Amino acid sequence: MELNDDLLAKLKVALARNIPFVERTGLEILDLGRGYVKMRMPFAGNVNHVEMMYAGALFTLAELPGGALFATTFDVQRFYPIVKDMSIRFRRPATTDVTVEVRLDEEEAAEIQARADRDGKADYEWECELRDESGEVVAVTRNLYQLRRIGS
Image 1 (cartoon, rainbow, N blue to C red):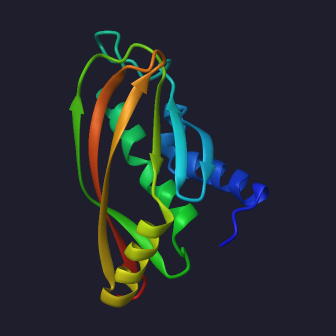
Image 2: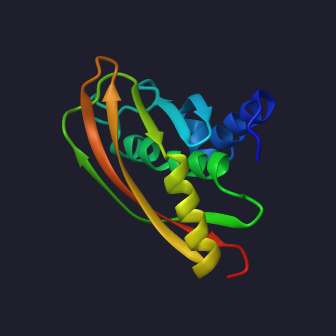
């Protein structure tokens, strides 16, 4: 799949607006490319009872890159992703917009897809850091996904 500017623009809209809950949060995809995504969760509208970002908004920001990586990296006609496990460690209160950047390199992606092609599924994982506007890490997540072959 070639990722031209038009396709990337359409993917940005679809990824951020395909799930009504995500659309309500105001999450933005700032940058998207093959095996790469950068997203921002706005503080406004995602505040809890003690004036910090709601934990569910942070969790959503850390989970959604899995769909973006899938859509830009793997053969969407032959595979689909699922979340198998995810954990989040909160390090400090988030009181500003929060961003996340996630990368999956070409070699690792090819190996994951080859395993899923051969075995019908393949686990893959990554950690990500959620950062506030000053660059401070507000949370760290461990994400375990599985790529599954359609029809397996």
